Structures are given as C-alpha cells and as structure tokens.
Image (cartoon, rainbow over all chains, first blue to last red; front, top):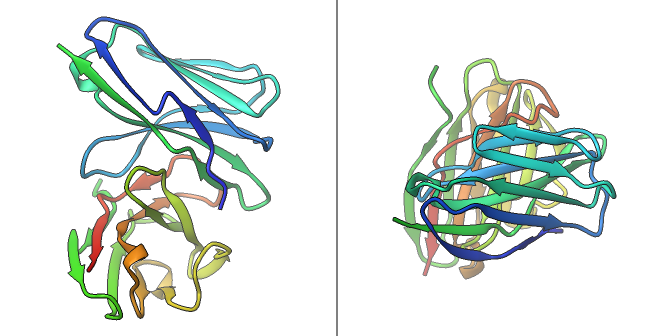
Length: 111
Length: 114
C-alpha cells in the first residue's frame, strides 16, 4: 500500500525554536490531515485542510495545503517540551474517502 | 464521552498461533476502522466498516486476517495463523459518518509474534 513521504524523519530542536516539516506524494489528494501520536497512544487530529492553497492555524500550529495538491506543510512555532511526539500527515482521496498516512516525523524538544 | 476502547493492550504469541483483538467504538459512531502500524511507519488501513458492512478491505490479507462488526457496534479483528511480520500495533478508530475526517483512535494493541 502507498505511504506518503515525510521529511525530516526525525529532528532535535531547542525549546522555543520553530519547526517545519513537510509531506509529499505522487498522487493528488482532496484533503490533507496532520496528526500527532504520543507513545502508547493512537494518533490525534491536529489540523485538516480542504482546499489547495489553504493555510490553517491551530494555536502554535500552521499547516498549508500545497497548490499542486500533492504536498502539505506543518509549522510549529515556539516549541515546548509537550510538542514531543511523532507527527503524521495523511491524504484523503477516493469515493470512500480513504485515508493514507505518511511515514511520520519524530520530534524531540530539548528543554 | 468515553473514547474508543481496545483490548488487550499487549499480546505475545508464537508464529502460527491465532489471536483476536476487540474494539468498542465511541457510541453512535457509524464508521469503524482497523489500522496496522508497524514500528517506524504510519498507520495502514486494513478494513473500514460503515455500520456492520465492509466498505474497504483492499489492504486486508484475507488469507489470514478476518474482521467482523456485530450489530454495527463492537468489532473483532482476527489473525490466523500469525506470522512474524504481523508484529505491529493494531489501531481501531471510529468516526461519526463515513468520510468524516475526525477519526478518534483507540490506544492500540501491541502484538509481538515470536
């Protein structure tokens, strides 16, 4: 099955720094989603994007739906220790609105 | 509101044995999903139910995996016989309507096949 490409795959940052990560695909998606997964838990939805070019914020998080509909970006500003976790992008397509996940970006925040 | 419940949380079995996982979705959620998440990867959809009917099982290895959703509520996922490569976390999620992007995930069942 297809999995989306995410980069970077892991990153260490200092508390207070801004973070950027992206997701790319060879396929077009109608919707892009960003999830966060903490250890031992299921993913939690952070942001949903529904239109090409859309820019959406949720607190310190900002995500964009790429113009080509084949990519998306997530930015986290002023990182804090609780931002630690794995961030997944997911694309939605097809009549049954199938969700395809990326491989994840593991974020570590150094206090 | 209670979240998605899954059991067991952990399971260790030997290859060729059988195993079953249980999921109780959020009350009133019509759509239920089973995902397989191998270590270091994102979740991969195995099967999607709309009420008690299957709408997508294209990535379910049907020679060894089966799933059912009784009365459109609880669901079980079974593996028989298990292989080493089945070691993964099995996540259950539910959503209010088909295609609703707000999928609520359970904590998952971590399966180790030795």
